[in-house]
Image 1 (cartoon, rainbow, N blue to C red):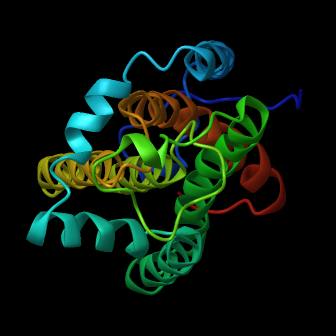
Image 2: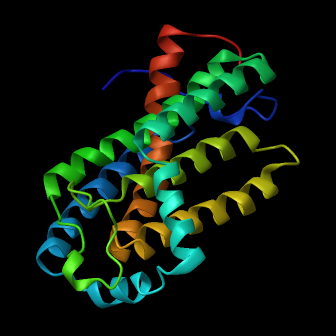
Length: 232
């Protein structure tokens, strides 16, 4: 593990996302424990889909305008749009704030929180909800694994990274509200679409909340601090 000195956050630091973590070891331990526990839970859920009936109940709502909306949400934040969107937001952050380290920090937090969840998805290999058991199965059928939900991990990671940028500004509370609504919309969308069990989506929220601080630590405090030092 890299040996890097971590200074306590300074009140006058230019951006919270670039401040050194005050408790790096605790941050890493929380993330590691969460990843291990969520992986084990994933294996249990794979053999015991205890929330199948709840997922079926949500999928029953996939009709009319609501069904069209949730399907559109799923397409809008697919892997390719998510990558492009993150890159565009990062570029905007760089131009507006004239701080490209902050922009790189934002993109890195999103990426390092989101991408590793796919490794757990491959490892656990939980099947998607059985289309034959759903009232409104999604089309085209998605053939990759179900746990955790990459769409949900992405949107929570995006919100957390944005909130890191907004800490200490008048926009932080607005960001919390808007971010909470976005997360709720995506969670409900992937479940109503019948693409994920409710446990997939909830586990994804926990994943992002636990992993994002560690992702910020590794990317900003270790990598950027070493290879791209600069102002906060």
